[in-house]
Image (cartoon, rainbow, N blue to C red; front, top):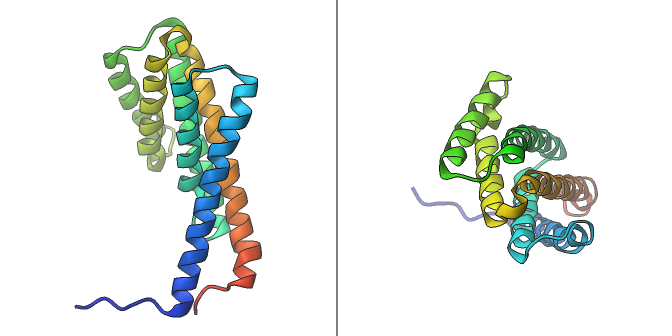
Length: 179
């Protein structure tokens, strides 16, 4: 069955949404790369991971409607807080180890499910993996990795929600979605 080409209105909506996504990604990256080093000195690799993580958070949160974006923000934040708690408790006492990575990834997915958020299990597991690998990159300050990734996520989520608001409340009125 041949695919239908999008209508002009659908194409314009796609261009608007893609542009908002691109601008939100750039803003999230810029904020982390500019603001975080002023507050916390990290390695260049740590800063780059932080920028990447903020961009991923903004992309994860930015959805077609503002309400969907807020729901995604709650999900992303819940998964990050769970990962933050598990990784921080571990890294305060012990250094990175591949076995710890595996155990904490599994534990974060299990914990998300057991607290009634099974939809956040995968995001919590991914977040845990990123936090633990960040800790491996800077082993002398491994315990700071969960804090840094939490900050990156909060900035990215905030940018994503703000971009969703601008897209749906302002740009959506100028360029309404196709009917």
